[in-house]
Length: 424
Ligand SMILES: *Cc1c(COP(=O)(O)O)cnc(C)c1O
Image 1 (tube, rainbow, N blue to C red):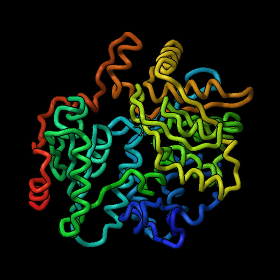
Image 2: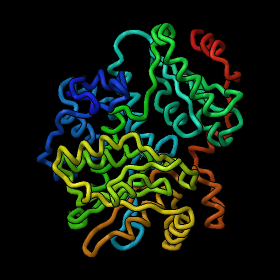
Image 3: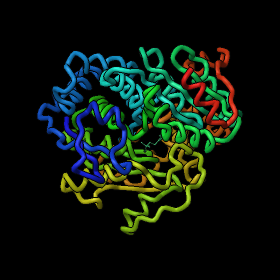
């Protein structure tokens, strides 16, 4: 598989290099040089998730990774289902939150960990990342137990929810977690200092397991096929998919699925008040506002880092950007949407509620709608309980960790200390 840097197309890498490097020159994103057309879609849709995903990813990645290795990567990564639930006539939810950290990022995170373990080459690898909660959990669980890969996760002490902390600070093994006596920005600054330290980087094989890593996107393509597989051929005819979007990785993966030949009529990008893209699609002007905090905080992004990949796909496929639907909801509208879903007997959370409502607002007669549910309702327990005036039981996956002791180390925001800790 060949990829090029969107900012500097002359910079070309293979899959292994793209996975190891994450980003190209000038922070440019890597993008596949060619995306094949799959001519056996119906046959693929008849297969189970893992087997189908092995074939799809094999077709994209090509012979660079031996088939048996790739098959093992997919099997190890996709250990949980992605069920489609009917919410009302013609509207379905794709539930992506049945993985170990109850969010769709488990799909990309787990496949990236497998990919990195496969293409790593010789030498030690240390994944270093800072988290304000969720990404840390996904990274920790994805890399947990992988041989010769150490993971160090920094987080601001006392500034993430106790439940979030329990989810990734109770694993032990190759996962070390450090509560920093400072805020999230200080944690991020420490990570940056570490990556700027060439000697340290070399000594411990620093890698960021960055969220823009191409391997994440490739993994996410697979659940769009899984959604279609669970709908009837008639429902698949005029399928419209609404994607709750922050950095637009999820939407990019959907667009690649369509490029591969999956019959999706159109996509809708759904956002909260951080609505740079919906405004851009209307006015043609890219003018990000300051990021604002909302109920759907995983989408509080005003400069979505995957957007260049979306534009690249439209350009290369000869699609008009005007074909991309978009809509944004305020927090008040999000609350109403969540209540409306609940009244129909479907329990959701703010991100999925936004995707549902924007879909409903834009779905036309004869179309079937699918919206993505990116997190388990219990991950947004406080908001969901307040808005719906109910009590949510803790799901098994969270409850299990909640009972375990915290294993975190504690440290001041002092780079010299962190450096010594990393070299230990
Ligand atoms: C990360 C995240 C999103 C946004 O996904 P992007 O790929 O960044 O657009 C939406 N919902 C939840 C719950 C998330 O964690």
